[in-house]
Length: 397
Image 1 (cartoon, rainbow, N blue to C red):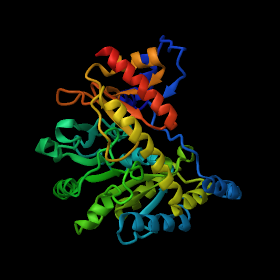
Image 2: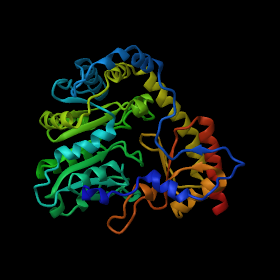
Image 3: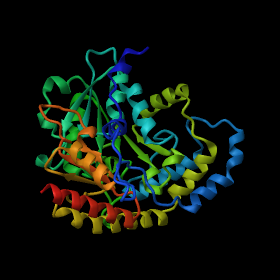
Image 4: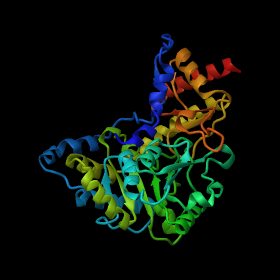
C-alpha cells in the first residue's frame, strides 16, 4: 500500500460521528443539521430539465476536455462575472467533476517530488482536501493560521525563507471556508509577488464565490485581481463549482481556468486519470452557467437567513456577518467540541467544531473554540436552531 495513505487524518465529519457516538439527542426537539456545507435550496428546473433532455449523450464516451459549447459558455460567464477579457476556451478552461476532485488531482500534477522536501502552503482552518492532496503528492503541508487578529488573512510574512524556497503550490480559498473572508487586491498582489519570486503555483479555490450579500459588489476573483494588476495568468489556476452557486452538489460539476501551460499538463494527467464529465451533465452545466436569475434568488435566500440569524447569535457568541459564503464562524469562548456535543445532546442541533477543520500549527489550533454553522437549512429551521444555540449559550453563561 502507498505509505502516504497512513498520513491522512479522519475527515471532519468522521470525527463528528466519533464525538457523538453513544450520545442520544434530546427527542423533545426535531433534528436540525447545520454541520455540512451541503446546499439544501431547490435545484433549478432549467438544470434538471437540461439533464433529462440530454440523456442520449450517455451512449457516447465524453472527451476529457469536454465539449466546446460548455467551455465557451464558461469563458463567457468568467468574462462577464469578473469583467475581464474572455479566456481561450481551448487552452485556458477545463470542465471538472466538481472542485473537490480537481483540487486534489491538481497537486498530483504540479508537485515535483524529485526535488528535496517540496512544500504546499494552505490556510488553517482549511478544506481537508488540500492536506490530503499535498501528502499524497509527496509534499509537506505548511499551515498559515487564519485568526481574528489578522482578520482571517494568510500571514505570508511569517513564513520562513527556507520554507518559501521549497514551496511549489499554495492553496488559497476566497471566499474562505470557514471564515467567509474575501481577499483584497492588495493581498492578491502580495501572493502574486511571492509566486514571481519563488516560482510556486497558486490554486485559487473559489467555490463560494457566488454566495454574497451585495449584488453591486461581488467578491474579487483571482483572475480578476491578476487582470487589474496588469498581469497574465502565469502560475495561477482558479477552481470553481456549480454546487453552491446553483444548488447541484450531486451533479459534480465545475471548472478550472488559468495558466494554459499548466492546464495542458493537467489535462494530460486527467486523460490518464479518467475524469471526463458525463455528456448529460455537460449540457446541464452549460444551462446553469448561462442563467443568473436562479443565482440571484439563491443569494436572496441566504441573505434573508443571515439577516435574521446573525443578530440572534451576536449577544451570546462572538460572530459577525461574513464577507461571503454561507457559514457563520462563531467563537464560543469554551471548548468547541464540548459546545457541539452539548448542543447535539440537549437541543438536537448539529454544528461542526472548529478544531476539526484545523491542525495545531505554530503552537495553536486556530479553530479551537469556534463552531462552523452552515445556514443551508430552511429559514424556519435556521431561526429555530439559532434560538436553541442561544439557550445553550445562556445556560453556560
